[in-house]
Image 1 (cartoon, rainbow, N blue to C red):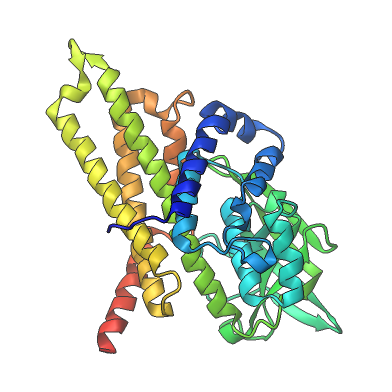
Image 2: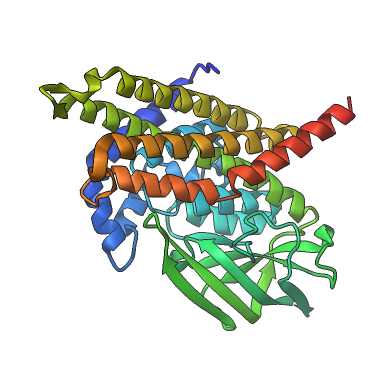
Length: 380
């Protein structure tokens, strides 16, 4: 799939790639991951000054209102740099949920501080690690006058150890299968009744399990279609995540080609071996197919819900399988060195394996895509 980029999109891509090359080397990232904080406040401030934290935010709230393709261009560069800062969680997922559900006062208060890099917000939605896109919510919300109280458990809350604010899904009825009762609430991460259990993930990023025990919360806007908005934001996040995976895969392919040109065996570079050249050609084909799928998901991010969801599931399926193939080939072609900490190959492999499971596995999205396709055929 071909696409002509605007001058603004080209500038964002060039600036992001230049920043990653200059400020986010593999050694610098390793130090950030190993630090007590686990991410860099200075890098986060740089993201704000470059305008990246406001890309998904409308101009009236301090952002630039960029589309999904522009977000994808930035996410690809962040994937190439293996950036651990909570860009997807805060600047995409949280920002879009607030914009879609919040009142005007809430949007102004919450979105401007995101764009300025003054607030990190995490989305607490998953309740079972095996169900990354839950339809049924067990966490309960009870009205307490003008205030709400939340009780329940959330797991795999990405970037939660760094967050000062949480967006929490809970149901306002006794029926866990009633999607119309799902609401999104704003909760201070330091509020009473919250117990956070942070942990380090395989790829170096951080998440937490969070228990809410009658924790005070504020309803985000009127929440008349919270479930539908969550679905829309999840599909956009999948498209953005797929572009991040593209950045990882491109870096693996480039590094593998460069390595095979310099690794001498039997008096010549191993790149001269035709079988290995065929492997790298297959890696390149898989990458371009995955890129086209990610681009399609981004272009359809504002389409009708059924078409948007089908494109997102198709992209997640293709990108997940391509990421596994390319990372496995890269490790094999680097030999035993491919899994050592000294090379970035293993770090890209781990990130791609994490991306494969985020927002649903390839197998789950294969089933979703098949059901959506069958439903589309029946309505023709």
